[in-house]
Length: 511
Image (cartoon, rainbow, N blue to C red; front, side):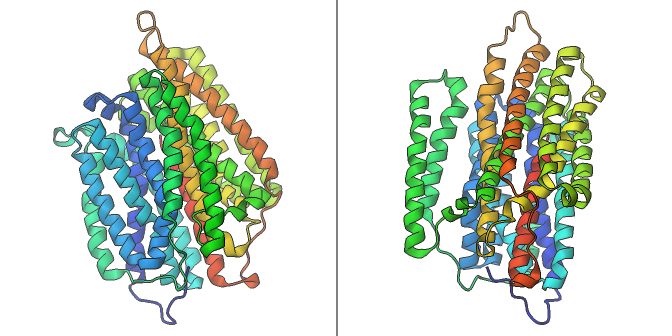
């Protein structure tokens, strides 16, 4: 990726930054805003539980699959061009989501929205790299992180308010339609203020690799998501069992692609670095945990306990407080002194929070109050905060500099795939319990409480697995310093680390 900037920086660069950061904020708010509105969507459209899963998982899956290819398209055809195509497609998809006539249309448009986001989001950091001189990038990345944090915190509350206000009788639809004025403004201003750039030696597209990984993931996720509703048919188990064969074919093709032109979708040689391979495992497990918890949590509060979207959104504030506070302490004070032990402590603290939550559900049942959830949510948030900020740097620390960009893209992709997989597993750990609840003898709070409790067991198990995998991470993350290589590479590592941390913060703050 070329990160050269003119000797005299473009005076319009700050306006360009405002445009791309607003687009990132739109993507962030859209992800966090949807989860809180899912129960309202389900009631209004009559969507099945599997459709509800696809409304959230479809976006994550399309985004993950298209992320690396979207970045390469920008390098080849121009970052500004792909950014404008992405934000335009995202805006159109948002309008279609808001106008969806049925659950199937909403699922399809959410997938389209995720694909458009995969074109738009990778260009943001590339545009920053090519627009700002090295001495300004640190400040810019700080602003970028602050904006992402703002979107992650405000998204759920904004979604709760829009859903509860029922503007113009549109119920949940304004959560998507709100993107229209923002997207149109970003498109118009982007045309004027963003400077075009391309990579001088861009990697080629790997469309066959994209097709293979897409088929393999769908063979795994579709029957997993639909299985509960369809009565777990034989074809579902056959499809899931055959998916590893497709992934094996993908690996074989990627090796051949690397030998042929050096442009594989996934740089398999990265997995020879033990800490990176383990870190990718942690990212995948962490995504699965987040995918399970946040979807199940909002369904439990709104459908099981009958709480309003606003009450559910406000209940999540202690979690956000725990994440933001612990993340700051983790990076500034704890990790420099204790290294990976901080990440492992975070996994154990978060698992302890799930235990407190299970105890409280058993103790208070359907009479549980928001204030009684403060303790487990604060503990879980603190545990996640200890992990999300330093994890990416730890995973990247032993990766060769020349592969830093590919490694960072793979981290983001893996995290999103984990989210999609976690949402698919909700069929097993949550809806399987809910569907078999005794509605003649149990209240909705008891049925959904049992499903939530079972799901928390899965979350705790995933966190313990992440704890074990973290032993393969370096005891101390090695720092990429500017005196050992190209400043552009340093900026790329820093920027992609910010991006990956932002994706994790998005999950951490999205009820």
